[in-house]
Length: 315
Image 1 (cartoon, rainbow, N blue to C red):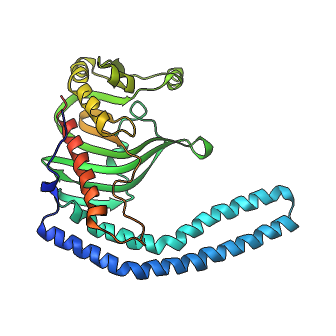
Image 2 (image 1 turned 180 degrees about the vertical axis):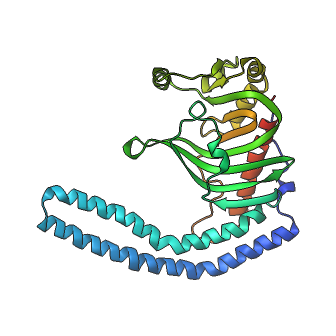
Image 3 (image 1 turned 30 degrees about the vertical axis):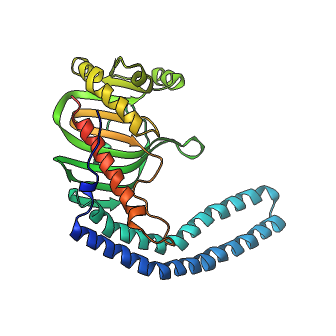
């Protein structure tokens, strides 16, 4: 079982490639002045804030009680983060404008391709909850939607989070695919990360799961995944057949963490872990190069689509 595809066949065609090179050329031509403005803004705005902070810290140290100094320094540190982002904002907006124009061209092999940054995908509200991956809130980066080889999909770079402050924990970081499968599963089937002993104890302490447990029979897969379903009769042959084989293969392709899968009727949610940002561009002071910066994006999306097609055939 593999997800090998012809990457060369999916590279932008001549017209799209010409438009893409034009967008990159225009970006690189404007990059110098934007970079210069960025350095000036950082020097004036952030540099001025550092001088102001040093003055305030000195006054706090000399004039205010010592037990307040830590609070003042903490507020100045937090304020520095806001000022830094404000100083870099025009350069970030300039770079994002390139992404808005460029990524639909890069992924021109996807029919009806749509791209947006920072939006919350609609499917996040229907994706199964704590039995698949615990989450209190979610943060999103790039989102791409379209149709490829008959598969209509939405892909979102997403971080799922529980808790806040010191108790904040990232429960998933990577890409979430949502698509409708040709085959409908008559219920819900989840392939989640196998919890450790502490997590199992805490889950059971608060009521456990209402879904039945399925064993795949593959020791390596069962050591990394836990399968849960509300249709044991329909899920067992799938888990012990194509689903276990697919997860065994995907573990060799995506090594950052376990791949999670949820089938809910015709809806499929594929959670592919990744530490990197798939569609990140270099800093604004670095010129864009097609082979170095854009070709890897195409390769990554091709591999993600091939993974989705593999999961689509599970049944």
